[in-house]
Amino acid sequence: MYKYDDLLNSIHEHILNTLIALREWLHTWSILDALGVLFLTVLGLCIYLEARNPVLTRQARVLMKSYPLNLSTFFFNDLTASLLSLSSVYYLADAVNGHGLLVGMENGPLKYILCFILLDFTMYAWHYLMHHCDVLWVLHRVHHSDPNLNVTTGLRFHFGELLLEVMVRTGFILAMGITVEFLLVTQAVMSLFILFHHTNTRLPGERYLALIFIVPRLHRAHHSTLRSEHDSNYGAVFSVWDRLFHTLREVEPEQIGIEGWDEPGFLGMVKSCILADFGWTHKMKTLPVPIRKSRE
Ligand SMILES: [Zn+2]
Ligand SMILES: [Zn+2]
Image (cartoon, rainbow, N blue to C red; front, side):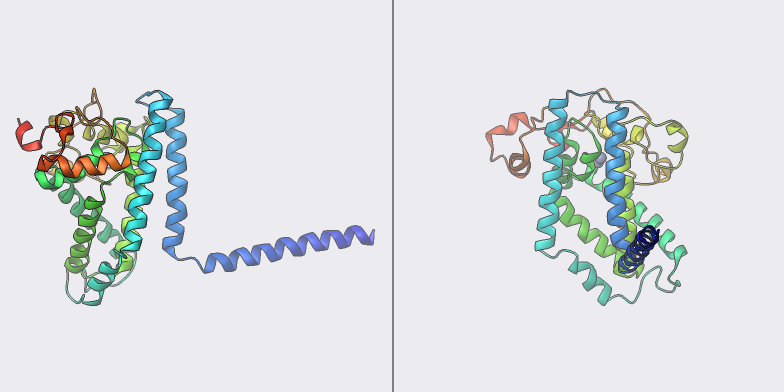
């Protein structure tokens, strides 16, 4: 009898100690750590959704090419950005910060929300620019070149595009007069929406959700091979910017990707993307027509 009570007490004590340790561990977490875990959770959920209810049905073999290519691009970019310590540019901007639109506003939830909305508008304008400036399109079309649109396409970007985005966000810190934390938190939340709108799935009530947010159906049109369709729906989170500036299109594209783009693999993708526009490669004919010539 005593032994049974001892065992119960020991289990009870063990559970209590585990809970205390868990609470202490969670206390050491920053909001960015929590957002990192949330990012992986959302990624897993999106993969589950597109496996359960896909819109674009591809052969598993083709899809299996897209996942590793996009993920390796993501890890390569992430590693290079860390090695170059790119985020230190944000801290430099923070150090010289003293002016800006939100500088007089008290730190708190309202400032985070406002910052999030303004960053979303900035990224909308930047995305528009990438489609309408040939030099930027050369980099951005790497993102559009995935013919198997899926959640990992949201991680596939040319490193040059990410480098320029760091500059845009640095300008955002200076223009708003915010701290790095505000930028990193709002940016991390935005990346969850980017994963969401790249998901190859159809959701119930998506039509209504599209009134406010960029949903997978809207972003699918943005990945159409037709320029008249992919030059639309530039938003990352809210569809309101596209509605306001008449760039919203609600169509189901016939084909996804960039016409004539033979997926060259990770290194080939980056190499041919840079060289083609200077005419240094014989692969020229297999690459997309330069945007200016294809303008309708
Ligand atoms: Zn785009
Ligand atoms: Zn996209």
